[in-house]
Every structure is written in structure tokens, then in C-alpha cells.
Image 1 (cartoon, rainbow, N blue to C red):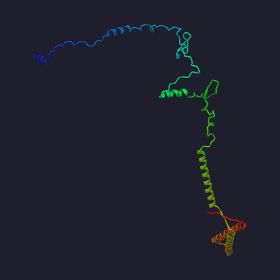
Image 2 (image 1 turned 135 degrees about the horizontal axis):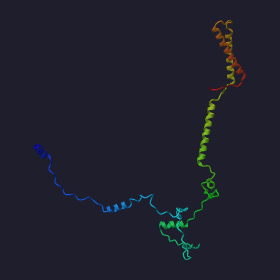
Image 3 (image 1 turned 120 degrees about the horizontal axis):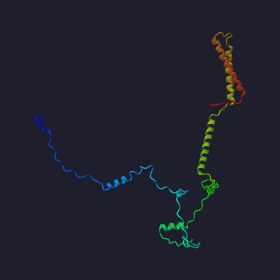
Image 4 (image 1 turned 90 degrees about the vertical axis):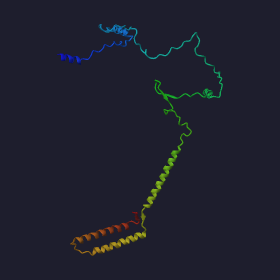
Length: 252
């Protein structure tokens, strides 16, 4: 026990000295006021229903056009005197002091220039709906131009180019037709061709007459048919040349 008490006395730390107390924290000056306001509005809704407020008067109702902006009231004549100055007479001419600066120059130009002409309108409904007459196409302003009815230069130039191209095309077509035109055989050439055809017909006919009577082989039959076709074609050509006096030959 003595040893245990001695061990405990060795392990326990010595007691700390007491420190002096710290000063208090920040305290707002409005603390009491906040507390008072909170207590004042604390039990507003503890009764049945909301707090009683003043009911609006039935005479104070929203009237028609009450929220539209209103113009300022006109000033009335005071003691029978006009607030606006009298108009000057027709014979009055303002005295203009001309100075060499652009302000007076512009003022003189504005005073002495002609007034603007009224714009033409077209009214198409009984409610008075109108629109400008010039852009509508109803105002005849184009016929008053100096060049009205005159063909523009670019149109005449284009027509001339088209006419020239058409003439060149027609000339090229005629040239091609002349190149492809058929030639006419002369009487001498026609007679020579007719004689040559008759000579060929006589030769083939002589060969045809020399054929054997019996055609028992395939070659004999084919040779006979070939000679008959040649004779038939020559007879057709001779008849066509003898029938037509003028013969045309096309270039192939």
C-alpha cells in the first residue's frame, strides 16, 4: 500500500495556478431595442384570424381610364389677355442681319426657300385609311420623264447582237446544205452507167444459161440462187435508170 501510494503521488501532476478572468465580449448598443421589438411583435397572430385593418371605402373604386396618362390642363386667359402673341401682318418683313457664318446662311436659306409641296394621298375606305399615291403605282410620274418611250441602249445593242448571231447561223446552215447537196448525173454519165449495167446483165445471164439442168447438190442450188438475185437486182437498176431522166447522187 505504501508503494502504491508512493507511485500515485509520483504520477499525479501538480495543480495549475488559477488565471485571472478574461474581460467580457462585444455587446451591441441596440441590444435592448431589438429585444423590445421582438417582444412587441411576438403575439400578433395568437388571436383568431389576421389583425384587423381599415376596410377601403366603397366610393374609392377603380374607375375607367384612371390609369392612363393625362395631359396637363390648358392655361386659361388671364384678365382677358391672350397668352400667345398676336400674328404679324402680311406686310411685315423680318429684318435679317446677314453675317458671314454658316448659322445665318442656313437661316436665310430656310426662310427664303419654297415651302414643301403637299404629298398626295389616296383614301380607299370610309374610315379614312390612306396611303401614299406615288409608290402605289396610281400616280403617272414615269410618263412625264424626258426619255419616256425611248428604247434603252442596252436593249438595242442586245437586239443587234441577236440579229447578227441569227444571220451567222443561217449562213453556216446554208453552207452546210451546199456541201451536202446532191449532184445531178449528166446524160453522158447516165448512158454509160446504163450500158455497163446491161453488159453485166448479159454476162451474168450467159453464165446462168450455162448452168446444168439438174441441181442435185447444195453448191449448185446456192450458185443458181446467187445468179438469180444478181439478175433481179440488175433488172431493177436498169428499169429505174431508164424510167427517170434526172438522177441525183448524194455525197456520203
